[in-house]
Amino acid sequence: MHCPVERCREVRLLAYPDGMIQPRDLTIVETALSEAGPNDLVVRNRWFRISISTRLMANPDAQAVEGIPFPVLKPGDALADGAIGEVVACPAGSGFEVGTYVSHPLGWRDYAVVDAGSCVALGRGPIEPAAYLGHGWTAYAALTRGIRIWPGDTVFVSSGAGAIGSMAGQIARRLGASRVIGSTSTQDKADWMTTDLGYDAVILRNRGSITDQLRAAAPDGVDVFVDMVGGEQLAAAAAAARAGARFVLLGALTAELNVAGASIVAPVELDSFQLILRDVTLRGYSADRDSAEAFPEWIAWQREAGLHFACSTVAGLENAPRALHDACEGRLRGLVMVEV
Image (cartoon, rainbow, N blue to C red; front, side, top):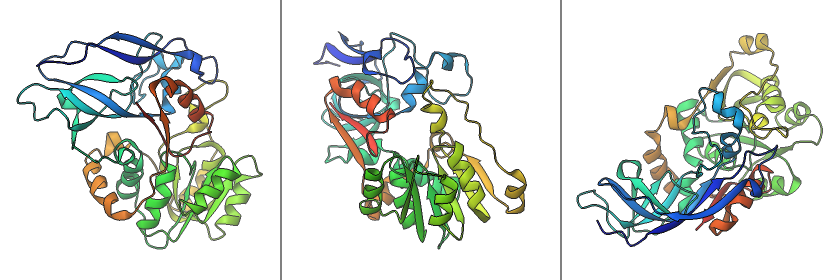
């Protein structure tokens, strides 16, 4: 297999962050491209995803914690995340062709050598990268497999302007929810959520009691809670739960974006007696772990659903470290993606 590329650029962790991750904690290096093995593809990356979970991956305390569902980082390691790229070299008989697009897990670099078994063929385009790199499929799997939406449900989505939340509200509506409420951090995002994403009401953090705001937005209670935050928002949803409510917990940003440092500890106080009396279901859920088979179904479903793919696109590998910082600071909307 002839490879037309000898060198690549990649983003590496330079130092463990002190508090919030900063662009200076990352560095871009030019290095020799790894030698491709007999089962490898060489891919020119076109887009890759930026996930705020990278902050947790870069936490030194994460090294000693079992059960984290992604690889931890130490200084000198290259970052990685979902990517879409164009095949520039592949072995004969691999099932892939030069010039076609593939999705794979080695973003944060301009060229990647990827095992063919880790690649999914996407054809020659045109490609809607947000459909493949975004977390719409996570929300879809959570709302069709993790729990179920029933016609007429009132749904509350925490972090409704984020990568998952910006899709979860839309998906819930198309699955039959009659009222969809989200939470976010700023009035600007709240206006965008109601105008572009179709939320009926938006709760603002730091604008008074979450419990009181949710009670006003959902006076008859909440049937479904899609949670990416935990903490006060989970407690407020529990207080507003109707009989038979279903909660699906997908993240805990109160821990991942803790000002003092990312962690996997997200304590919250709930009235368990009321959860029992109201027959409330709480399920921790990972689409990657629990429902990987849902991804092809999601791709077919979203084509007919008319969804708005909320996305903040940043141009250039050199701007990826700043984009990660801005995403963790809550300055960006929806999926955060770098166009290489």
